[in-house]
Length: 427
Image (cartoon, rainbow, N blue to C red; front, side, top):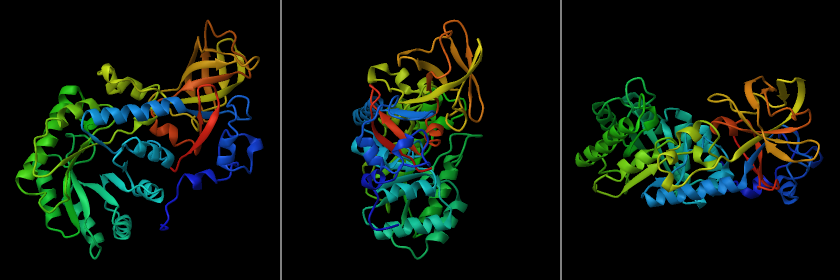
């Protein structure tokens, strides 16, 4: 990687062309910054359907809400970058108080570094020798770079140690406690975690920095079962500290958990961590909050359980155009699996913008029934008689992680339809 990090100026200088879906065809050759400066209207400014819009107001609201929430509860915050893979949003998250960015795989960490992220938490056991050598080189090149990753097996520690021999400062690791039998990754028992910690201590290339895990993988997760698992995690940190396992570690002990479904329980349990031999970095990793959604996280968000703490706002709307109205009970719009997330819930029709006069009305009587590659199937019943070819249908989407990945350049749109910027993704 070049010594100079990329940044917003680099993204603004990228040329608009055929690579980017939905953008105005007459903008060909403009830079992204030049197109943003024109402040075109999403509906009348030459944008073509389908086009994904990200609400500027909802985005700002969500960023501010998680900043105040984590501050109120004494949590540090490393939002998961795999949600958006958008460095502009990483910068905004850090500006709103995030400690760093979480990644899952080496590519995501490289994107973070390319755009100057100084703290990366890789929530996976990293055993790829080439990637480990890259991490070591980054640490040697930049004394301010902080990197942590999971370890959950003795074999993983052996592979990491082999790859890192001869490197400079050791790589900080946190032992991952699995969420239960049949769950995803992580050492299954406290004894397994201790064996992994012993293996780390036997190396000179790794340094034990804390413990971590992912509570949403608790089988049949409820507030009670998630809380019980989190107390196991925090007790593990206490026992490791009592045994002196962090003596050669960094200046703070990391205890990390927190997806987007149970961060209220994480906050509650982490508040009870007793004083340890050094300060505790209570690190939350929720990522989907940045855009929220109209499905999976609308249903799962902890703010439904704690409404007094605020509410997230869905920031995505996919606009597609009616291209066929073959019968009174059926219509088709020109977006499909290539444009909309469908892995957890189908999109939902929310509003219709008339092709005749530009008026916007609720999408009454319109239901998404299925998706093809390039069509969304709409069932139309009473109340949808006015829907006709040429109308734009605004759709709410579920699961941000599989929405962002389908779009390389996303218009950031104000409530009145003005496009004020574009968000670049790197999947």
